[in-house]
Image (cartoon, rainbow, N blue to C red):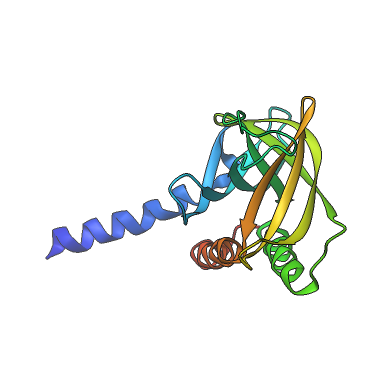
Length: 180
């Protein structure tokens, strides 16, 4: 019984050591939440620190779904990542803002800072345009347009994906109450 209690106590003492994302090394993604609704579409919420030690949270939208004007989507390497903020509270507000876009039916587009992900690292900053779209079959989604080289990538965000990221973030915030 003593051995069991000591193991539990040791495990509880080690938990705060894992809850230090601000001390994470540069150019490493620390995932907070992840969801996948289709075989090839995966959404992630992660923190990332640059070489200059700037820190932020990002919403990874997976690979490109469509390149307007092109029949074939050949850009399978890059991932669009929306910048969510420097704190968990800002990240939660941005996710709630994205969720509100479904109710407002914004068709003209809202600009959000974004970056392109290649492997584990993030590339240059750019602006992504987020707009509401209703598909042919009545499916509602947000479209994120991200400029890359000489074309624009489009990727789709469903309401279910945003709700899943929001609930994953809330759970993470409960586990790490002292993290800003």
